[in-house]
Length: 474
Image 1 (cartoon, rainbow, N blue to C red):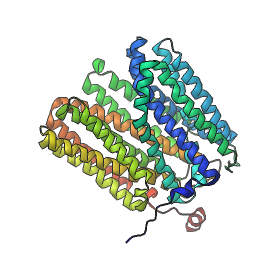
Image 2 (image 1 turned 30 degrees about the vertical axis):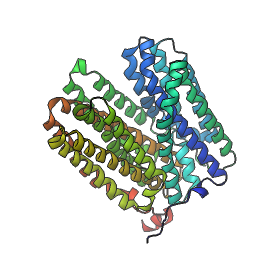
Image 3 (image 1 turned 90 degrees about the vertical axis):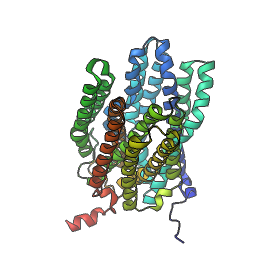
Image 4 (image 1 turned 30 degrees about the horizontal axis):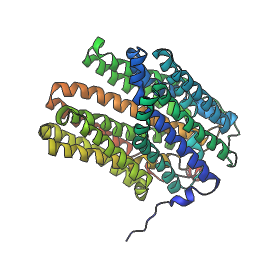
């Protein structure tokens, strides 16, 4: 019988570092609750304020703006310390909440959400960077990062009930405001825990790295969203083509440059940004495609679509938070993700060709795809984050917070590109018929196989080489 090599939970939460981990997890829980609250009430706010035309910008404002300000977060940490980074972000966040909940028009709601995006960007890298220092053992670090998935699942179970009650009784403004109190408690606990934890800062003065590249990424993703939202003006085909082309340009130009400028000379960390973008792009593109297929072909009521989203999220949380993926080596995790995500695409080809009219078998196959994608991301997501920061070299002003920024950038860009491109193309394919859906699934499979083969050589999957050893070898 094989020995269980998973890191135990109890030591993770022991002592000052454990209190800091718990505070970060509470803050992540609050962010999850807040995200669900805003998603639930934004349509209500847009309708009440007569700003339905601004609903799209409201949905995307925070995410796009946060990317533009990520480079500043690592600068604040290195120049002024984690407390300044934490409270600068918190003050801007609370200002954004205040603007949003007191908004006299939808334009002010968008402005408040943009301020929340600024706050998220200013906070970039702090959690992952500090925890990477406090959990130098890769197994413990992976287990700690894996717990974050649980903080995203629990809000999806709790928040809808609370938000519904508040929305019906007190209105959308209160529903938007209350998660800020929970987040403030989490930030206070982080601040308190940071005072008893020895967090290292660089000797070399910090500089803002690659602000133009981060801004270009944000602008490019905004153009993608605008193109997809302008289908009535541009035409569906033209808008999707623009979105696909611009997404490719974002990946090849400013995203690549942002990674290099953030962690110069650290190929392992740069590779981690690419690999995490692939993990998130693979998972969230499937997460966007499966409900669309379910509603189009099998269940227009949306029940099956909701089940598909819940199944993948649940398995992601279970695999990540229980440390099941930790039993796999880095290479094994890569093989699992490569085979599973590519296999999901192949199964969708089968669905499009033969099962779009079979509610039972077709629904079961979509559930299998959803489950497989949840397992794959649950095993690979914390693994990639832990491996990216393994052997990270803090030199010449570079801190682990820069490594955290790289990971957050990869996650955000991969998610945005995957969802935007696949959802946009899927809208065309569904309208064109089953054959077009089958072609889309086949292309997804081919791209997945190629991308995972290409990233198989990434340094993320290999053991870290100590700096001294690397210098000797060279």
